[in-house]
Image 1 (tube, rainbow, N blue to C red):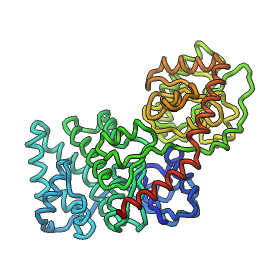
Image 2: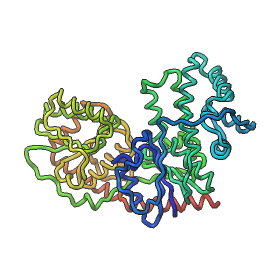
Image 3: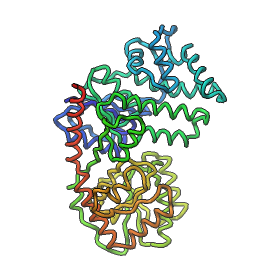
Image 4: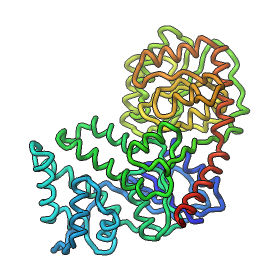
Length: 469
């Protein structure tokens, strides 16, 4: 089978998280050919991969959305009534006929600037402003909508590689590409979401200083529209845990299409790692990418507070500088607060260092089902996490899982709560070891890599069966 996986902002340009998952996923299916369709933001990273691509990756195509430009033709082509209606619905962030738009962009030779400089665009945008944004400055709306639609039109013109099935690892732009590939080659597509792309974009827009306040609601609606478009024609939509499945249904995905397939790790690689011998120190590890979404600064504040009550703690932060500016802010915070016993390790092979750690910590403000927590569990190390994504379920189990507590879960961005949780695991070695045993058994029973791969193989069969009905 030839599988086209569509990724946005991750593999093969960055390490960890979804990228690690994708790399291991492809390696686990040597009987299939994979085509990677990678969406990035900065063209300067073209061809600069963080991974040696597996042998069964037969092709990679890259699409970059920053600095998108297109030559404008002298005359905008005539549109029929169906095309005009679909274009108007798109500008309104309503319910356009996507296949009509695909035809326009793929076969009619229309360029993005053709549309965005046309009288049809200005007329529809004026109507939208009059109806819903009467008090917003038209210039702000014009530039917001133009910047919103330009990359979308651009990807709808993309040269999509042929495949037997398209598998997108998010909705958004990647979801539109999956639906486009399905339309062009008359094959099915499926969606796997590690996080809730639509909700994550909504949170970013609500916090962003660059978004004009009057334009926020339309920009948020834009990403909801993209998710609805991806869900509506998918053969199957998977998530990592039950709460995420329910969110997909709330966002408009038919419940009959939704499946939960948990992440899986190579349990045997971690299960044999011995516990660290007891001494005068307690070693805490944070395995993550140094980026704002991981909220490393809250972790550092919490550790600084912990040191005032438990001086024998040492914090190891292992992972790449995904955001160098944010990383420098973290280093400066350590210097300014004069926090002792903080070690920035850079990128490591976790199995080589896990024996040096007593437990792990994750302070993220957004997660799906973090692999770093599962790996910590498999090694018998409990974890202090924030209550994001699936973390509470991992720590405390489900109604069907009576294995016990595998750590402590606290609200995100709560420095004192995080500090107290770390202190609890530092001061109670017996309790920490009992949590580690529960964590290890939970990973063994529910989060093994081979089980995950088998579930995805079954998912492909289900998608094909559904397509042929």
